Length: 423
RNA sequence: GGUGAGGUGGCUGAGUGGUCGAAAGCAGCGCUUUGCUAAAGCGCCGUACCCCAAAAGGGUACCGAGGGUUCGAAUCCCUCCCUCACCGCCA
Image (cartoon, rainbow, N blue to C red):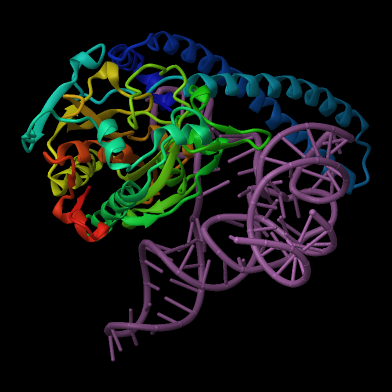
């Protein structure tokens, strides 16, 4: 959520920044300003009357204690009270309108984000490693999976319908190995603290990290419970500190969590849906940081590096993309994607998205820290996938396939599997 | 699922209709005294919002949330949320 004061004081700047995104959110600024003005006018008037009522009520108390007559004043206060009720209703209405509108306005892109309307303007920042040489025609992960019986897409549909995976045998083991490997690296070498949060969260949490109110149809909801299945660990993990004021010495907070992620993927039928690339439930290891405004962009770089490290250790060729303004997620001020090479698709495949939300989420969550001057400030929140499992799985088996159809396990992963290959 | 207790400032905790934004203690900050440490004394010490060009200052709201009663609610009533304890059931 943007700061209403920023909008009030620098409306042109806010409009200009919003206009660099796709969509016409700049138009909403006018509306917010109008409501804000009306709200403040109403509040001022209301507070004047409340002050009057407080004064008179005290007088009544004083007179009563002296045994004096108070009927007249009481009647006057009653009248004021009626006006107050009206104004309170108006003030509350404006307040709600303002909040709802603010919740629908996306974050401002950071100045370092490349300008552009859509993904075609994204910038490739760097590449790591090189494309693997695969003898013969590279099989894609679906073909490999069938051949090695490491997942079973057909039977999985008996359980949840299309869009669900069932890993089997060595595949299930490989998936679990990847989770453990990632968490171990992030906790032992990158200094993250592991958490294992609930996967179901309340509406407030979904609002806090910007999934709601705009994207309700993308989420799974438990009927009659006001609980949602988390679409990413970002939701439970970031919301852990909702409504708190953290001492600055605790920052940056670095958290890593493994969770399954649940996404309806409504409207994505036919898009990149082959195999295990886009599914309704998938496992992910997520990195979350809570930090200060001064350090958040440095922290974003190191979070990205932490996520990249996993692919480096697995020896997988990848590239880092800086998303342009038009391709940024709703709450993000800046986002890097990591895309790993998929020989089977002959294309790069997104496995991680690392974002700085600045104070956008913190305002929604009322998450603050107390700085050295004892001022409470909104924290900056960051998160990134440290990595999405099915896609890493798919890329890994494609990159490591051998001429005889087996898959060579990267050395670092072998201890987690207890084997050097899957065949 | 049952029964009971309870949610007040950074913490502990008093407060059952009026001068209570809230006693007291602890922690914190400043000053004084003191050879150091320690101790003592005095003062300050919540958040958000509104008015004001700004500062100074003033005002309003907030005692889990929402609603009600009342001239006036931390205090009375209703609903909800949450926490804790014990019992039952259970992975």
